[in-house]
Image (tube, rainbow, N blue to C red; front, side):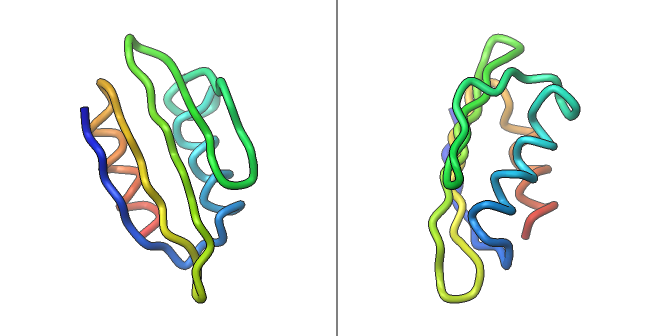
Length: 81
């Protein structure tokens, strides 16, 4: 299990949209099990990814928990950083 955090210039809503595009059916093919403006949870491939965002002055902070998707999570972090 991987737990990682970063900051991005994106708003929470934009970060979640990018997460859905990246991990979801049109990206890595995971099922979107839960989604709101500030968080999303994905399942697939025997694991899951939970993305939580929080607004800050310039952009947002993003926390991600991963089970079996560590490589992809690190790739996603690079894309939004």
